Length: 261
Image (cartoon, rainbow, N blue to C red; front, side):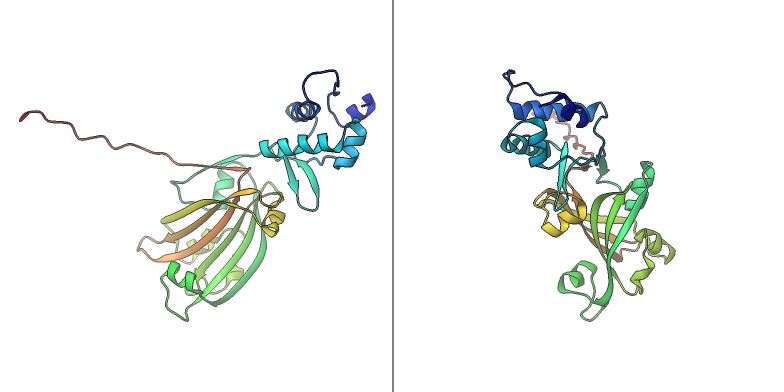
């Protein structure tokens, strides 16, 4: 590998005489460049063929290095776009607090935004009827959005709200909870179910990651203070950007009494 190529990529030279395998050297070189800021978040790497040519190594070696860094979360592969330095953003999301995505990001000093994927109004499906406690024939408003923090895709949210609560889904532009608050249906508590999933090709494309990337799927039913269900939301959160945190306590065992022993 020439020194010019190394400098152009802001990487340290690889040494074939070094007992460390070349793919590990390349991984270490990329990680070091990221640590010192020479490679910025969301910067694109050259394609495997170009990178192998510039570094004077095989494409197999490059592919092995990239695969390892993707698994470690240093790089992300975006379907149809290439390989990029992963966003330097990892968020802790408490599971014990009910708040909107907009409020969560604002509390972290991040700018939230949304890309509207679809809005519709129609009869509730069987699952929606059960989740929202509705009767057959009742109408619901659906709002499907891509949620972003500082311009980085973070989650796909699919919200379903009874039409009597939200008669016009186009009212939701940024925060659903802000609209619910204005209409007097602000949730005060929620029940959530979550499990790990692998993203489909379409979901991964929206979130800017490789297909089959891990994600956390969360279903949430939100209730008003009177116990009325006003929201049923299913969301896909990027596994490389979110840590969900729950505070646990242990109940103290009853003190043993040995008076009668």
